[in-house]
Image 1 (tube, helix red, strand yellow):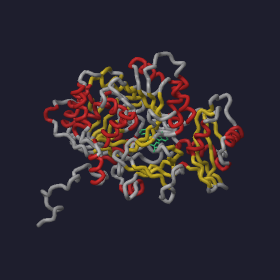
Image 2 (cartoon, helix red, strand yellow):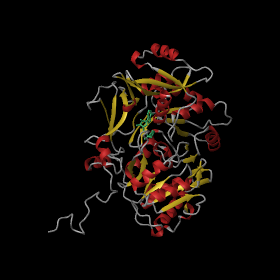
Image 3 (cartoon, protein in one colour):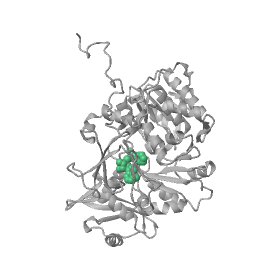
Image 4 (cartoon, helix red, strand yellow):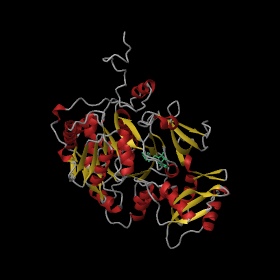
Length: 556
Ligand code: OOB
């Protein structure tokens, strides 16, 4: 009898027809998540169908081009899916999607989900370096771009990538396609002949990892896990059909997409408003016009908004909740923000790899100001470990490891990296240094790699940044290591002053930190005053760029 492997018509083993290069949950964990009702056997495409049947005439999306009802979104997703199929795009083919915050983004996402093709969600700010890498890694067959965005011609970038990456057969342009590409609007066909959709345990999308070091990685999220992520997040934020969610961060990012973001608000029959960006110019008028009730920002935007709120005209009083996450929110700003904006504040400590922590409605002011929340799911398993991998006691700082119903078990197609990024029993090593309070809330103290090794003593950058941000003359602070002949590394604090005409001095800062009770070895050795801090595409402090420029100025 031929062995199953060599028999041409052998039945595939269950799961073996899933996207290659992905590590999925073991069968017992998957069975548990289904039994607990987390994974409900939904696909994103079917979910949209159900929403459109329930609320056909409600407004699903608002963008610069106008308003889109749920029925219209459903119809556009179907027709675009059929258009992709007609181009020869098949289930499980990867498609790079690099669209700004527009209804087109949402249509393309659902269209690919219906077809079972897999979008890799690139940020508008990604350029040839990242896109080329992601295209090669995923062997993408198509690349969807805007014509131009924020003064950049994406068609030229797409042309360049197509020359470099042989798998890339189609460039689809939202807007004017130019000579060598197709208009996204022409990706349109009768959906009657669409193939059957994907399975709930299929990969629905690939998120791009948010690290500021090395090339980005792709994060495979399944229909089941991502639907749970969005639905349960909507529950924690108490979203209702009356809510209006404003997306100001790039929607390819997990936070505005599904925490609860666009998918969460659509799932309750509410409206998603897509802003071109987070500047008060772009966001504030939309907040007034659309009576926005919920939005999500990164801490520097929260800071900017809190400074601008009372000076900018307009009635934004419908806002009831501002979610802040992506980087550490200084406690002082967390306390100012709610009274300043006249709404509730929620801290969100999340990662594209999965685990989400939220502060809850019932949490008191101190928990909301001083912690980054607690895990979303009762089945989120969180371990906090020391350098040797042993669990620390509650209150001690250690590295957060996690696994659960919406946390990946491996990045896409990087087995060597996965061997270190995950423990043998499937925990994701987040690289985040945290401590846990008795209530289960987590406090983020920094990154494992962002500990300045000062002559053998470890100074966690995050902890020092938090203390620095509490100084009245400091608006924002970032702590980086500088090379030092004696100590190996010394502590450099780069600060944006509250008043540029009256910046703090190093002795000022040291006195302040000493009064706050900080250990002498954690004092900054160098203080740099900067007008601003470099940012990643979603607005986190870009420490790599900062360290490079600080290194150059230290050398020069
Ligand atoms: C979110 O996702 P990513 O993948 O861009 O970045 C994840 C990393 C975390 O590992 C942590 O280092 C940092 O960003 N981070 C925070 C934080 N939220 C994220 N650090 C301190 N305080 C926080 N509140 O950034 C993300 C994904 C979903 C929801 C919210 C944020």
